[in-house]
Length: 193
Length: 177
Image (cartoon, rainbow over all chains, first blue to last red; front, side, top):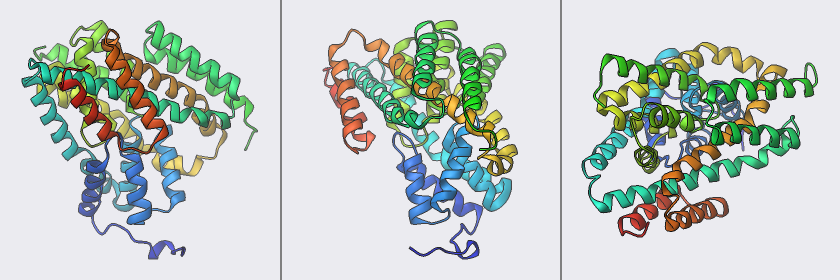
């Protein structure tokens, strides 16, 4: 693999091209766009190196808001400033929004049909399974967490009990349990590391 | 519900707050959105909420799109636009403001502590979301089978989730769930 100097790397030629690229990615992304984004931006179009992609993703993750939306904004901003940011955002959301609202309108219109109600229940069971699977795939990453396995398990269980069991508002869990966990991680990390 | 200034504003304000709480992905806010629109406001029931999230998973695009679908179920197209713009405005503003700041400081101790501390919370919120979506199906053993099969296939294979959703739709439409 050859390392291209930054000025020789391929780049989108216009906000319009950026928008079309994000549209294409969004339309291929069933159950999340991130895996498609990695393939498209790094491997196929080569607008970003693997390191730039990972870096952008990690910023997208610490910022509140949907990860892939944050990534699109940051990438768009890097190439064309705020015009690029909004072009990427529009590309990511516009067509999928039309599709999903059309589906929702159809489902509402025919909700009384037993077949449609059944299909929605079946899809609901699968959606629940997909989300639990995402959580299970993330579990092994906790082994490398600076908090340590015991503290991670305690934070996870405390959140499950408070939000899932006791139905606390999420803000209490994020500020209370999350605040304590961030503080504990801060103390375990070496200063300046 | 019928959209009025008062409840439209309440819906918008709720999603403004969700935007700032969405750490580790939009789906981690699903339990809080459920708590508000189902338990507190009674705008939707459990079945409608699960159906909204399932529809969003069946369509291509970011997971975030369950937000306008929930908004649509609550108050039609106006509800969809209110929910989506509420979910986007605060986080988008912040992302644009701090993206350059963050890229210079991502190795710093505070940023790393934040990522580490929030990681187990994100996982717990996802597990809670899955549990909530399954809650209207508690009394359907076939739905449990479908959920278990989805979990097994997602963890053991690289199957595209759209096939699993399609399989769930076919199983449900044929009256099996």
